Structure formats: structure tokens, C-alpha cells
Image 1: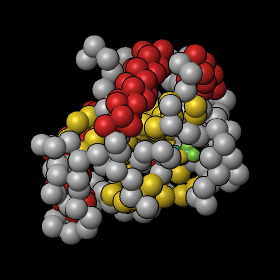
Image 2: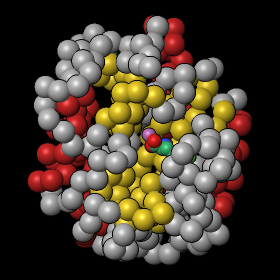
Image 3: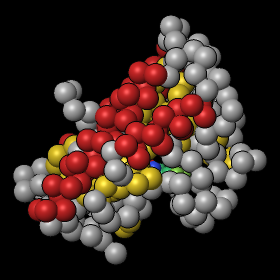
Image 4: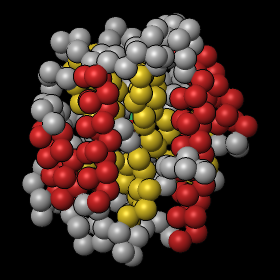
Length: 258
Ligand code: MF3
Ligand code: CO
């Protein structure tokens, strides 16, 4: 089912979006050499509950994971790209960390992800890969608006990723979002322009380009959740929740004050 939000629901979506963005921004600032992924999960839990919001993850038990997720944020290091189950791991200098967070407040969900390098060393290939997912996300957002189609977004995202030299996996991609985190329509990270569902004001989409440096193949970790690159190469992921407006698209998951 595809949900179209009322203006009142859209107002709540903005609150949820800002909360997700603020939590991610705070957690990025705290993710240093020596930080444990389980600390990040605990900090996320505290901030979600303090804000009177609900985790979209903790009880989530989709077909692509093993049982309820049981944690509050996805943490992926280096080759771990999607659904990273927080584990007892201490961050090292130069690690590429992906944080992916979705919460629901007053009945409306928002979802965002960021990738960044921890510490002082900035491996050039990792920086370029993160940059490609951020540029693809911006291109996808620029292609979104009333009358545009899902395929226009997919094509815009896929073109940036492909031109940057990365293979694109279309098994997991963006999605509709609203009263629940994962809804129709699916937004593949590559596709053909002019195809698919026609966007209309009030639709909320989570767009999420992600890449692996040298493969399109994923493997599932023994934890039953974490998806890693099949070759062990590094990975990156950038996600925003956007609202289709009367004249374009508005990003809901920007940190306040930025
Ligand atoms: N937020 C993720 C997405 O971008 C989904 C995470 S599902 C979880 O769609 F169960 F792993 F948390
Ligand atoms: Co998402």
C-alpha cells in the first residue's frame, strides 16, 4: 500500500525526521577511536526514549533478518553495509562506519543513514565511495517531485553510482515510509526513467544509495542480520527521508541548525 500523508501527518514527519538527523549527528560526533558499537547502540536507545519516540528496529522481524533485531541502530564497519547488528567491536583509526537509524514519533516514521571515517586517517578510496553515495542521494532527491516517477529517481541514483565506477545491487534500496518504516513503493538504486509509480505531494520516500567497492554481491553474517560485501571490500551508504511537495521534494532528515 502506498500512503499519502495529510498536512498534519507531514508536520509530524518533519519532527521525526529532525529527531533522526539530530541523533545521527550526535552519534557521529561521539564515534571516535576506542568507541564500542554497543555504546553507540545504548546512546541511540537513550536519545530515542528521551525524545518520547519509538525504535522502528528493536522489535522488527522481517523475512531478511533472524528474529527481532533487538537493537536501536544499525552499525556497519568497513565491509558491513546494510542491517549491521551492533556488536562488541571497538572502532579503530580509519574505520568506515555506517549508522542507519529509523524512529517513529507520534505515529510517523523517518529513516536516515550516514557513512563516515573514524579518526585521523582518511583513506582516499573510502572518502570517494562515501562521496559517491552522497552525490547519488542528492541526484535522486533532485529527480523527485510531483509528476516524476520512481524510475526517474532510480535512474538518477544509479547513473551517479555507475559513473563513479561502482557495481549497483538492486536487491535492497529505498522505500516508501509513513505510519511504518518499510512501505511501497520500492525505490531500486538503478532503473529506467519514465517508469514506475508517479509521485504525488504527501508521499514520503526514504532514498538510500549504497555501494560496495568492487562487487554487487552480499553475504549474510553469522549474526543473521548484517549484510557484508562478498569480497570483504569496503562499503558506504547514505540515506534521507524526503517528502514530495507541491513543487519538488523536501529533505526531512537534516540536522537542526545545519
Ligand atoms: N533503516 C534500514 C533501511 O534503511 C532498515 C534497517 S532494518 C533493521 O531501510 F532491522 F535492520 F534494522
Ligand atoms: Co531505509
